[in-house]
Image (cartoon, rainbow, N blue to C red):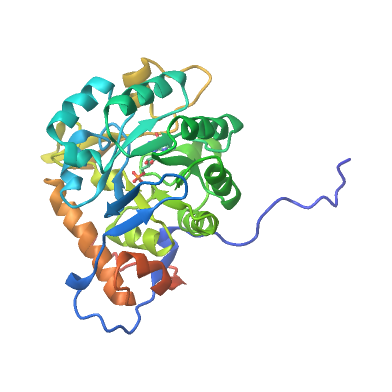
Length: 350
Ligand code: 5GP
């Protein structure tokens, strides 16, 4: 029976976003940021495969989850999660030309049966080591069962699964077969989940808590969404993320999907969320009447070649490591101390 003394269910501890913190600089013996090694070598808790490279992944969205972006990022040892709308024929065509890129790619799949069929078909022919099981809400029993089913079907592959934002569900997904848990509900640049549903978790705290839970089981986490600048990528790694996934930061370039649009003499490229009205119209023909779109469409200022942004990101993270005395990316979380702040930067001339 409800009584007036029932406590409100409010967690009083403040949860933080990237914008709420900065990293404290520390005395260090590092001479130059050129010394900093961003490559990481991973072994995984289920898969017996190992992987080495820079663990930054292009999001499996229409504009960034493409072979073209993956190829460009692979030049730097980075990764691409190819969107689930690429069929086995397009994988085969790509693989014949770029076997070296495939090792840094994820094959993506959602929860519907057709995705599982495509995943099976692609995995039969393409030696891609990574699978990305991606749903908006990683908290359902059916998703947990699906992760187990995919683990059974692909015992040797590296499976990333998500999205979740809390430790207990991170543990559940790892125990069900995920090697990497994808963390983030609502932080994305074109996401409207928090507006539409009121659900979410500040991303820095989500990454810290999920990384702690995952690492306790020898699993890994991927911080997905919410990075708006190189400093945010550095904060995600410093918070314990093993991988960082980027959508908006990689949109708007020559290599990103979408036509250039001119408006008031300025160039832009379109970018939309995968649960947006535009994405649903493109892939399903309509927005089903029982659901609201949880993404939006934006025009991103055109930014030229992707390599310019990649250099800024990698240069930024190297510099972060130098400031806190981390000899390599792996050492960054151990060397990092976050300070809570009330403002980030001087915005007078923006
Ligand atoms: P960004 O780097 O742009 O901040 O975030 C990218 C991430 O946003 C993606 O990897 C994915 O997890 C998430 N995302 C992409 N499209 C949508 C959408 O339409 N709705 C929601 N809620 N999240 C999205």
